[in-house]
Image 1: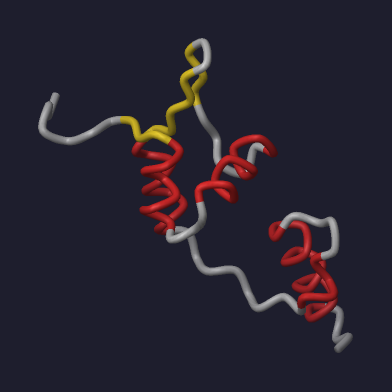
Image 2: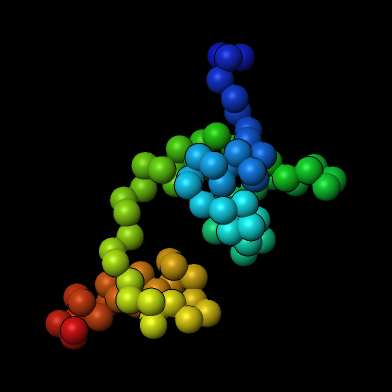
Length: 88
């Protein structure tokens, strides 16, 4: 096992890696968009989760009015479904 490589990150470190705010990162953890491990009050995110998030294909552009209360994943899926049906 390579001990030089971090295996888990704090939510603040994840936010920095993903280029999002700390509060957004905590919200994503709360909603499950960023899977995490909880140890008492401590929340950590596995390095493999960050790697998967950063290597995933970028979602297609979603109009802001479609986001509403949907997650970005729901809105992207909705937009993709319409574009594959031929709707604009």
